Amino acid sequence: MDAFGDLFRGLRAQGSLFGSSTLTPPWSLHFVDGAPLTLCTVLDGQGWIVPERGEPEPLRDRDTVVVRGPETFTFVDEIGTSARPLACGEFCATPELGGTRHRIGWHDPGQGSGTTLIVGAYPLRGEISRRLLEALPVVLRVESGGTGDPVLDHLAAEVAVDAPGQQLVLDRLLDWMLVCTLREWFDRPGGEPPAWWEAQRDPVAGEALRLLHAEPATSWTVAGLAGRIGVSRSTLAKRFTDLVGEPPLTYLTRWRMTLAADLLTEREAATIGEIAHVVGYADPFTFSAAFKRIRGTTPSAHRRAT
Image (cartoon, rainbow, N blue to C red):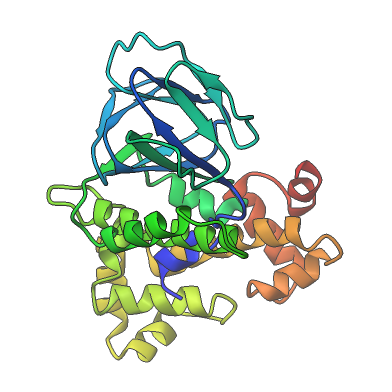
């Protein structure tokens, strides 16, 4: 798996779709859950995403906005709207307030035209996905017309019917939409993507990243990694450090400790020695020393804290 795929694997929609909001002005929906990551897109119409802090972002027809928590945000028809904020969250009821309607259901044949907002929230699952979140601003917006447009077509079709397995389909469509949105945002002209994103395209550093993520438990040396890629040790060390920002084995150690942090939480019955072996350490003592050096706490203390 590549670095992006590895970091993304902890982010999955699992019944976390808030629902669709079919709105007529004025409206002000305050999303109060403060989810680690929330994706908002409009199938028709337009409005504004207003974060707790920072500048408002326009959300036009088929644009997509991703908001990073834990701060909350509001979706309004216009800046300075006269509408009273309506609290919404994953488990909100179905309130009616003026021309504003928020619901967990989908198709309503009696509903007239308006702005249809689709919102999906992503819970944070572990340290792996946290590394992806750290590369994102509080609010990012991707305009329509990109690779996410076909996904929106599927979303529009799916929310218009009530069918068995609908939530499963919507969850996967949201995952697809999130991947498309982040790809386009990282690749935008003049952008500043994280170093590992750009490095993935390099034939040397990118292949090294792929190997380190695919085989983190291997007893890697710079020479061994360079041999697998087919370049000299010095070439690999320089290209990787220049593009990623740290030497390959330093990157590997940090990645192993990230994996270990999640395994310590997920595998409660596993011993420290077993976790050490999974991430490439022959004994628990060397592993524990590395874990404390990188994360500032011992594996046992991390497990107790989580």
